[in-house]
Length: 109
Length: 112
Image 1 (cartoon, rainbow over the protein chains, first blue to last red):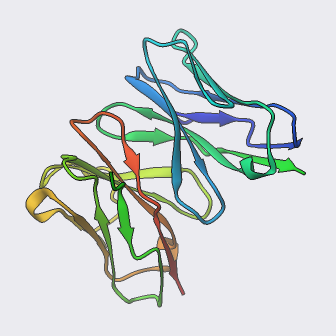
Image 2 (cartoon, chains in turn green, yellow; image 1 turned 180 degrees about the vertical axis):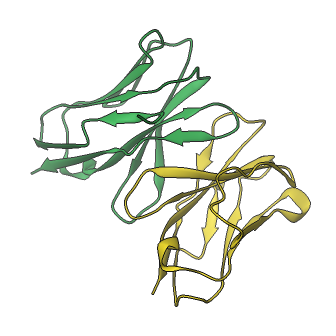
Image 3 (cartoon, each protein chain N blue to C red; image 1 turned 30 degrees about the horizontal axis):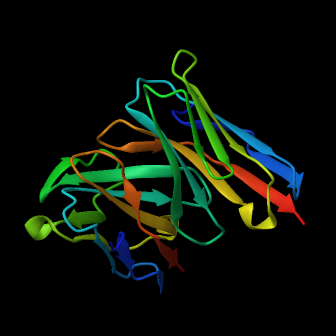
């Protein structure tokens, strides 16, 4: 499997529900970042969590990092239709970010 | 503060033609990266500049791709000649001293 692999690949929920996406990686990291890509648009940086952090919040986003398991999760609370997008995690090893395939989230109104 | 900008936002060309993509990093950022997402697959690293020098170009798919960063400011990525499989979204990112990478909006390339 690839570095920065997201799980699930696709997620469909109702507006107002919470969405949880997971990411696993293989090598040591300096930090891990989550991005969103709306269809046909660019990457939007959501949140960065450093390797010495375990949890971080930003608005309706909550990211956790478990370096012992080499995994991270992104929780979006009280989802909205506008959250519909592809979500990627990327491990930043200073020289290049390695992305997974992404999780496609669909939030139904 | 202006973010990473890319030009053009979209490009449609025919197979065999040449296309040049441009990336302007955030002012002061010495590191510049190119990535691409092809056919809805994962986003893949292409290469990394530190100032005007190529630090890592291990992701460049073949010699039809040429990246430059003269003067260590903006960068261009030229595809010559373009092939159908080059279609995708090309992202540029920049960082200061290799810290957080900030991505541009991407250039959507369609090769017909």
